[in-house]
Image (cartoon, rainbow, N blue to C red; front, side, top):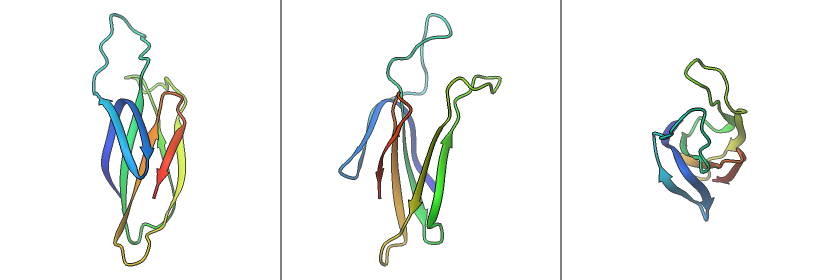
Length: 106
């Protein structure tokens, strides 16, 4: 498996086989902590090669600097099938602030 995209962003969707990413960022600026960031999503595109077919899962944990959980983990189970004579297949995921995975696109 290769990770092609893994982005923290304002919003993400998967529609018509396309991963849509809005406002990618790597820093949250705040006056004080803890803070509430109203728009937050994770966009992810993974590529699987022949031989990696079958059941998989992706699990993300959100922790503070001391590795204490700050949000419930996000887990998505999926199955990879590589059709025909292709040598690989991509999987696109978008997890928005509600922490629901959506948009499995094969």
